[in-house]
Each structure stands twice: as structure tokens, then as C-alpha cells.
Image (spheres, rainbow, N blue to C red):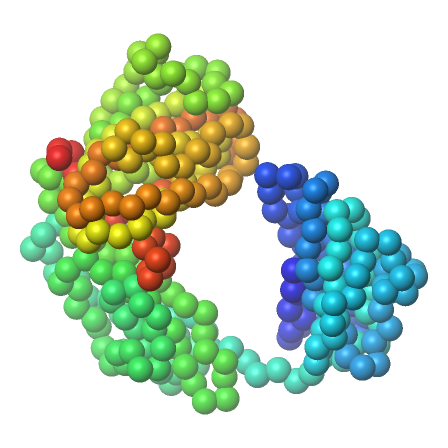
Length: 331
């Protein structure tokens, strides 16, 4: 955990629902006084980076931080004190902390249009803009890192085939920007897509679908809930199709869901993300030869937000959504 105290930012609150329970972080910075409240659930630990310079006085709940229970100093860095902490609740303070002058960041490029599904034969050109206006934008179309050796944006970029566009802005005197990404896919509606079935019921885990009858079914371009007419809660779904793999390799699949989900490849369970929970990611890895492979994703929702996203990656690539252009109705 490493808070970034920068500019006129005075406070941040965050919470993450882990499999062990909620992880909470809340920090404030004002008049050279940094305060940080942390809560870790049982059976967890963390490495924390407390903003601190040579003049800073570090404490936990009013006592010297190095003497606090569950706290161990690992090292000091130029502008940080690094501690290991055990599960529990903590209140750290760093007094007399001075923010060093910081270099600004270039603005994240704005891509227009963003993620788009296209039918073959469609023409599309993507424009990019960033601040400062004279920042150089470098981009790639294959999902690789857009460093300063990548193509330089000089005008609308034609998209003629499926692409994962990544772009960053660079300017002297500025840190490079955050990365902007967009997916452009060409599909054939007669070939690409998956089928889905909808089941109604008060499920608390994924059911045995053989014992239930779907109340609705249809086709979708992607394994996603977007655009589907679904109940508010108390339902389950099965998405089925075939995923085209272009080269033999190890593939890691992910589901991000609220509530539970599972992913099968060739009828083998690869990702088990079942159970009632908030949005949670789970993954699994399998080696696949080139060709089309049966894929099935099951999902249920009992209450709260409806979330289902599916991703994959190879060892040398970034995690990305399953491409709609690689999903087919038939083998």
C-alpha cells in the first residue's frame, strides 16, 4: 500500500473486498501532517509505504511506529518509511512531512471513438488528443507497450483490422501519461458470437442447470451482460460458444463477477469464481493448441450490482477481454 501525496490532493478513502474480508485505507494530508488509517482482515498482512522525510516523526496510535504491536520497520527510502504490518486496525501519523516539488504528468490521451464492434467492410479512423496540446502521442495497434519508439500520432489512424490500440502522451518536463486503451473488432454477425440462456430463481450458488429450464435464450456478440434485458436480481445464465485460438500456448482466463461465475474450456473447469460475493476476480491457466475450443461461462446474481466480465492473456501479452472476433457459434 503506497499512497501518493501530490498536488492539492488532501485525502483519499478506499476499500477492497478481498476473499479474507474488507481492506480499508483512509489518508489525509494537511499542513505537513499526514494521517493514515488502515484496517486489514484476519489472516492477512501488508507492506505499507508511509510518506516520510528525514524530519518526519512517525507514530502509530500516538506511540513511536517502530514500537507498535504488529508493526515492523523494513527500511527507509528517500521519501518513505516502509513497514510490514499484520492484520488489525492502525492509525499512523507522519508529522512535519514536506512534499518535494513534483514533475507534472502529461494528460492521458483521449481516443475517439473508443471500444467499437465493426462489420467487415466498415471504415473507421481514430483520433487522439492529450494535454498539453503539443504533447507527442505514441501508439501501438497490437497491444504492446506504447513507448517513445512506437508510432507517432500525426492524424486520424485508420483501423482496417481488429486491433488493441494503446497510447501514451510524452512531453519534456512532464512524466509520461497514463495509458489509454481501446479495442476495435471486425466481426461477421453470421459467424461470430455466443448463445445465452436465462434461468430465474433465488440462487446462492451456481445451480445444476440440467435441473432447471431456461425462461429465455438468445444470441450475443460477447460474453457480457451489456445490452441484455435481464431481471434486477435472482437469475442465472449460461453463455456457450467456441473460442478460436490462433497459436498453441498457455492461456490464463479470468472472470470478474458479482455474484458467482465459472468458466469452462472443452467442458473442463478452468476458473471457479462461484458463491455470493461482491465484484471479485478469479483466474485459471490451461495450455491450448491452435483451433476452436468449446467455451462456456455460467453466472448467477442474487442481489446488488450485476457484473460479468471475461478476460484472457498469454504469458507475453497483457490481459484483455475475450475478442468478439474470436468467438463463434459453431466449431
